[in-house]
Length: 332
Image (tube, rainbow, N blue to C red; front, top):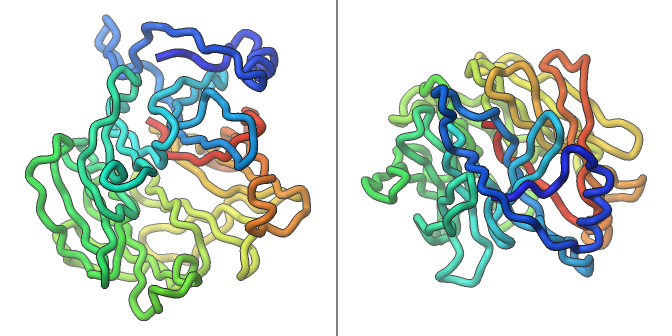
């Protein structure tokens, strides 16, 4: 696993990457336990891919980011996206965008030492880990509905989860009590608007106790439970047809959602993941330079990462290399 951005001279490292410099290799092992029995510091897992027409970058794929100095480390190559790291930070679930049968749900080591190995094929929509890291959940779209499965990380013991057939699982609460699902119930699935107009539900892993967290509303499906399992963070546009975005939180007791971070001039928060202790969030900001977000302008969007305190009062910024698109996974 190699550090990609030099923490000593990060500005120079960005310049080298922009020029496509070769990457050095180190023997660092992200998932290893130190000699004193402690885990290495947690890292932010993210994915990047090149913009259409842009010069290919050596960091395309899944990366881990040091939240303190902004160092990037490659975990999985190009075509692997949407990382979900295990609770101990050793393993990473990801989706491979490829031609069947090579597409699907994969598992890789967070140190990038071995090639990702396939767990399941099909139209995988969402996936997550159990709080103890002993199981994974994933939802797949069939011809008429969705099915959600739970199984061990080695691919054995696969059984169907008894949740609504029109729901896709988004996250599993750290206390193990709740699954968070997005539902297409009552929505025409062939409509593109269905993606941005779903209700969100809480349901126990055995399918009981279901209740709606909030009504159908435009949002993006990047939901995360807080480490204390009391709050869910998500984002949605300030206007019906998209952008600028705001970051919101809602308590699992169903109180009205509240804005945590709003848009700033020409930019807004589009995704967030919690630190393991719940004291900070890694927030991805997207800048549109004042242009409406369309199919033609989406490739021109730029990004940066901010580490924000849970009260929203303090933050520090990490820049994101130009020429790529960017998404967050987990902070483990």
